[in-house]
Length: 334
Image 1 (tube, rainbow, N blue to C red):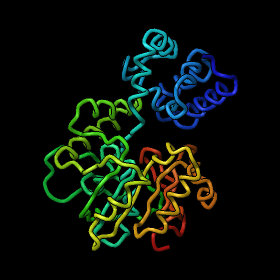
Image 2: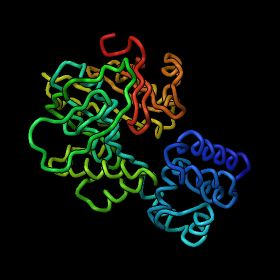
Image 3: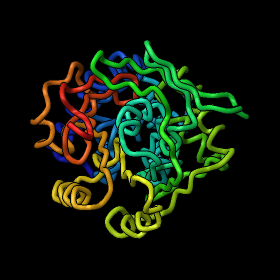
Image 4: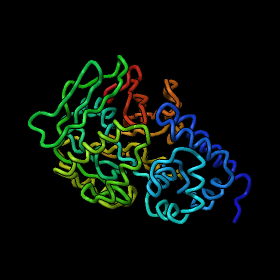
């Protein structure tokens, strides 16, 4: 079945935007491949044959890499798709984009450290739960470095994060007394197939990021955070009710709600969070909550995420936790 012109045009623009805005400066190979795809009728037709929620660049490129390894150019990608399209399709239909990037803890930390301690963390879209362990990692903000106290039984990942001068870089790690995650399809850090998929989601050319991911998985395997299978609208309240009342409950998510295409559901979730007893931290693409993004100054770089607490913008962040640019006067108590 041949897709209509409008569908192919939209896909072409989507992949070209991914090349120019997201991959450029982060993964030269993905930049080239996405640009090639945006001009390839053959590949665009394949993408259009997939369900609408399975056409995103991260998922497609990871699926191809999972099947055929790292490719050198667009011609190689087209050849793989001609010869192994069904294998690629099967991966796309059986997996989701669950980029569990633990380095995002570096941009959450300035907020977590300002809240009344101790904390109870509940992550929405937790994947393997690696972002539920902000107190078990190391951080390098340039002028300040943080490490967990006590012995570490596994090689410690240290996440570099460029912080703007006004960012309230913490002087100590938060105290976490309870943690839980919620995900439609949780990933098991002890399952080699699941871990291999997480590693495949790291873009080519980002070997340092892949190494830190492996180190974070090693930390998580010592004492895996509990991640339950569930839906944010049906199960979140039940899980949240189990958090200790003496701790500050924090519900947070990073790069999750963009996969919820219904804007009305996004807004309903935001309303429920603001009305709840929890502190709500959102780290998402600015198009997830457009009204929220209009309250913030322009970001320094295209592709940045908007970090917000209880519906108020506080910073622009690198999508993989590599930077944080604080908004003047922002914060939990501002």
